[in-house]
Length: 78
Image 1 (tube, rainbow, N blue to C red):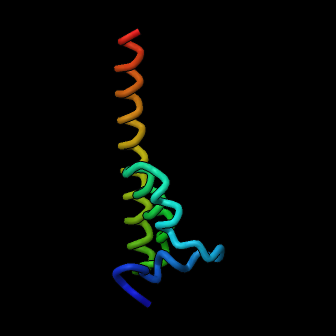
Image 2: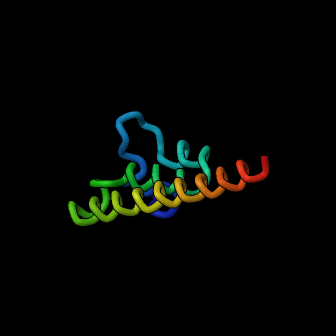
């Protein structure tokens, strides 16, 4: 297994799809959210799984803030 280009924790989905094949179709925040949810529980035990899920929440919340800011900007221009 190639730990740099194809880490095992991103290749263990039963679908056979590698995480990057999905994540690359999203923006930075959503792609990272997918990555951390994808690997939760596959890298480093339960404590690491919780950390990965907390990271996913961080990126989801950041995406929500960005979209709300964009929405306020676009509605104030109307």
